[in-house]
Amino acid sequence: MTQIRPRGAVAPLRRPAASFRRPTVDAVVAALRPEEPLHCLRPAAVTAAARAFVAAFPGDVLYAVKCNAEPTMLRAIAAGGVAHFDCASEAEVRLVRSLFPDAAIHFMHPVKSRGAIRAAWAQHGVRDFVLDTDGELTKILQETGGGAGELGLVVRLALPKGSAAYDLSGKFGAAPAEAAALLRAARPHAARLGLSFHVGSQCLDPAAWTRAIALAAEVIAAAGVAIEVVDVGGGFPVAYPGSEPPALSAFMEAIRAGAALLPPGVRLWAEPGRALVAGGASVVVQVQARRGDSLYVNDGVYGALSDAGAPGFRFPHRLIRGGEPASDVTRAFTLFGPTCDSADVMRGPWELPADVREGDWIEIGQLGAYGTALRTAFNGFDRAHVTEVSDSPMLATPGYEASAPARAA
Ligand SMILES: *Cc1c(COP(=O)(O)O)cnc(C)c1O
Image 1 (cartoon, rainbow, N blue to C red):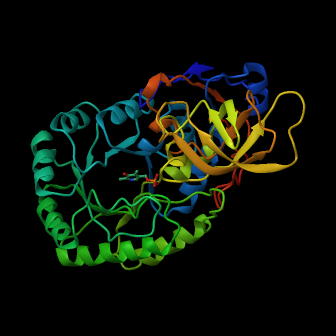
Image 2: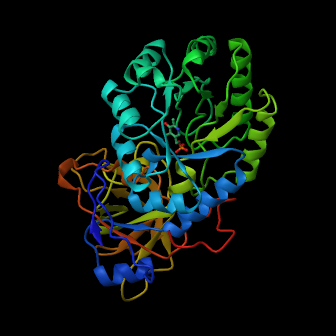
Image 3: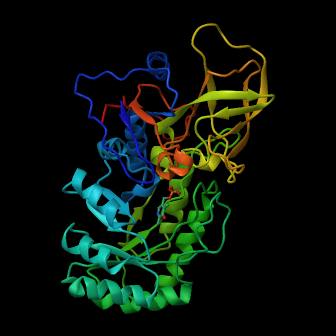
């Protein structure tokens, strides 16, 4: 049991001994009776999801570290066969390098500080850098001394706005004509030249990848230069209540259909985040007050539950009560987080036993992705416990279930 700190300040977890048997969530709650949010990590589920993705994807799998940078999760992902990491900051690069001396680290943020480029290149052995402007290309070439014949350059292509839950097309990426020009400009400096895109996070439509790869093929043809890599980004969805995505295999078929349009010999990369880790953590919150259909709990949108706030994601959940059983009758509740901000509300609706009361706990699942990673210290509510459990994910996503017995990371 370790305290964790907010906003990427990743506290090291104690590594379980080989003989360690993880307890269940219920056992931990019964023993600890936690008054602070309890993060329950499921490393075996993360390893199984990583292994399923690696087996299905026809290319290299880069884990998008921003989604969850807990060392336990990173080790579980590596145990599933992922040897590449998509980092967006010098701190992420340093963390991954400290855990995995031999991993391939790719710096996939299109706008980097000069110091971060320099440190990644010279101290951490990063060779691949993304860009979406001429200015960034200049920075990368200057800070890597021209790349010494080892530089990988990846041009980020902007996509038209799609149907993903989180649109990622507004902030980064070069328009097709610009991207073609950048590929031509980068070619003479690149030992490896690539084109990347991101269809948007939690994208439920496999055809989005076919369309995006087809656009990439047009850009490559327009550029008129050879390229080695097409990076199909992240965005692979997981199940949430009321939203069951197509199976992983449907996304892989759509990617193969697009890849048939690419010049022969182009290698594929993918950058999944959410799909590898979402099922790998839940958070147990405690009810501190009930007012009618409103429950005041000890974590909220400034903690691990930001996607349950304005973005309106729904999460699997269940009541945990020590002692006598809860009512069989359920009703819909609204949750309020612990800060004094009235935006700290999660409307759900959260279907729970009608007699839920102060002191009960609620386990909330699918929080391995963009849960822990988004915590803040706002209003002083930055304390939490973290533990590893043997439970399965609270909701299975088709295609990611353990096909072989999951082994501990
Ligand atoms: C956030 C991000 C990812 C991961 O996206 P998911 O939707 O979590 O799979 C991958 N690549 C880039 C460049 C990102 O910014």
